[in-house]
Image (cartoon, rainbow over all chains, first blue to last red; front, side, top):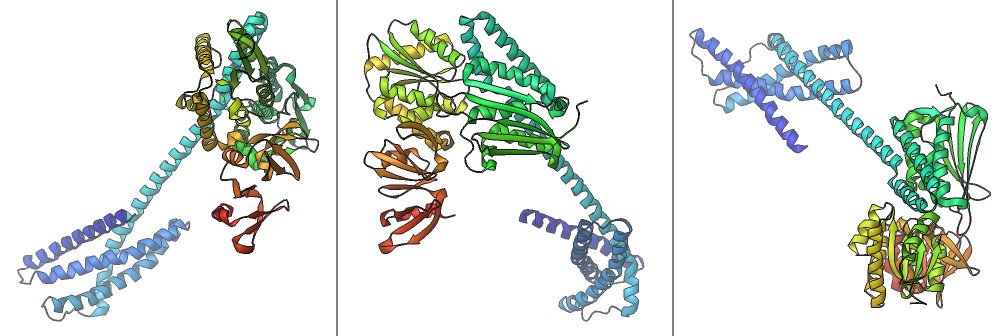
Length: 361
Length: 256
């Protein structure tokens, strides 16, 4: 930050030094051309005090204009602001010239400074100040516009990176290596006992993977199709856990054509299986329900496990599946959706997802 | 060693996965009795009762997971352990670091053979302590780096084994050979000294406040100065415990 300020200060002073020297060259050559004899230090001091005065005066002017732009000023309003500042700037500049030269001339051994009749001076300096003012403010405006567009591009790039990260996470979540390797292990074991059953499991797994990969684009599908995918998953889980797992799916017929985000149910059921273990020797009982409630589609997944500890927000943060689902729903539906996690009075936990009810295309 | 050969316990929540290991080890003439357990709590029971020589232990199980099983066991009865996991990068790295045997699912017969050969050798050598030391270090690592993996404690209540989530525990006090856990206005026991239990708990949450009491810092409602530099801690369930002046340095754990 300070390095940037320093660099800016040096460049700013250099620019006005160059401007002052150009003015001096013009002024001094004009004197020589006319064959007059003047000490070169007189026009030099005059032009340099004028240039450095402008360098200082422009800083608050630019700061003021920037604040106005940040406050939403533009077009005629902004132009009007410039027009209002200009006479003040010019008067200030001329006054500065008088005061600074009154101080510097005696110091340089040139005696008292004579700036002539001041009312005329103010008028005489105005056209020159108008040109310089237009030039500097124009450049400042262009510079700010350039920086704003660069910042916007940077922000855009950041948003895109974030989006890619979310997509990648979704993909990893869907491939679920833990699930995949466990299923492969189950199949490799069942193969010794029942070749036909192993074959069926392999087909189910292939089907499930195909559906998962097809839906990675993250769009919506009809609830009926989502339930088919869930059924494939449950078939595999039943083969793995046998009668230790019982799942009941109940849906109101009118909900089957409702649009839902693809693969919304499976993470909820997985989460119920992972955290909803009812304890040694007891079967995990999962209930999946879909119903219509006013203009909303409500999906519920219940388990008969120990329920949640701490606040629902903490529990959602802990279950990777739930946190991902919550984020995805937020991205898709904003405030029109909700994901709630609560303990059921009769024991176990319930996750309910509510979405705007819409029919799938 | 019991009976005619090495006794083995296979722990996995999935029957086909247990069947696969069983089929494999049953073919080995040096293997004697084979036990199975479908969850962590059952596994702890079987180890305590049958004292198997060798344990095939699935890492991820609902309820008490593989690490939780070992935590619940007395180091004295720890069998030789071969961990089993489908996919757990953290666990696999920990097994590598501590040179603890593991096999990946789906089981590769070569790896299983190698693990079994090493296990037989280790068991044949007798319990020289090296094996146990590795396991103890592994568990210490898991405790330190993944406190969330050990969120439940296997405890007893009315002579029944119960999995108690640590988040529910208000405070713990020692009573002879047992530690008594107070949670939701009920009490549970675990057969362990307070020293050993303290080692197993997340030190950021569970704070020893005297020789005989550990409190859950999240449940501290009030601190009152008492006499001679002692403090009284009032817990959110209303219980009051003393923080003795020798443990005064622990007060900083209760800063909000």
